[in-house]
Amino acid sequence: MKIVFMGTPDFAVPALKALMESKHNVAAVVTGQDKERGRGRKVSFTSVKEFALENNLHILQPNNIKDSGLISELKILDADLFIIVAFRILPREVFTIPKKGSFNLHGSLLPKYRGAAPIQWALINGETETGLTTFMLEDKVDTGNILLQERIRIEEEDDFGTLHDKMSLLGADLVMRTLTLIESSNYVLKKQDNLLSSAAPKITKEVCEIDWNKPAISIHNLIRGLSPQPGAFFKHKDKIIKVFKTKILDENNLQPGEFYQGKNTLSIGTGSHNLEIIELQQEGKRRIKAEEFLRGFTFTS
Image 1 (tube, rainbow, N blue to C red):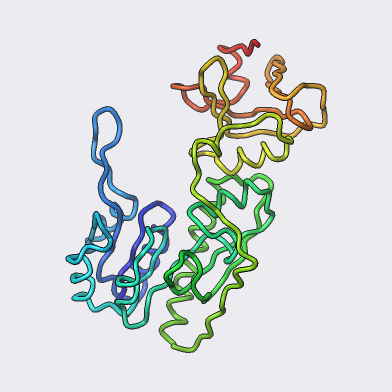
Image 2: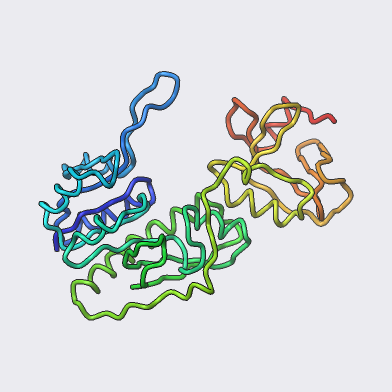
């Protein structure tokens, strides 16, 4: 089949790679615009664009997804199917263009965790299982009828980085299985039960700030869900310190926000048990283990 692929971040690359290695024809890739980053304002490409350039794919980078020029070009491509992985919200005039419609890969077991950050919120909420869903696009975000789903166990040592990578590979396989299903025209769509839905909104700075009055397990899971990026943080003497890895301790002898600095360990009190900080990063510095961090930093009240 002739495919138009839409995606932006790292998460989408394995699916595009799998499509490239298949019998199908990737007629075009639609991705986000180039951005200037850093002090030197160096222009950077999306991960999907970098892969597309390496493989000589036709690239479209619209500023406005409703642009009439883009819609005309998509129609001229005469694709059988649009595949969307971690891209922006598409209007009806776009997702209805292909003969066989458009499907999206989402990082949760829909209708659970509808929204921009499903992997992060599954970790933050302490889930032990999540998954991926492919579904046909509808007007309301993440509400379309389900094609396929795949479950994945969340291990205790998983954080956003490790779970993201595992799910991106699993997602590529699910995209290819879904493509085969649609090509066969022998499938039944499953309607989502809106009563079982939950939200996974965009991660904001407010979400990332640690509240030491909360139970240790809640803080531990927040840190897992935001590691390695954007990173959960707390403020100490007007400096931001990010925390990437922690361990819940049996002790409960510290007040919320109270530090205990051992020879090579750093613990802090929470609303329940103490929490050992294993990896952290001082503002303007690199991420390091607590043992190294403590050689040049002392927490004082």
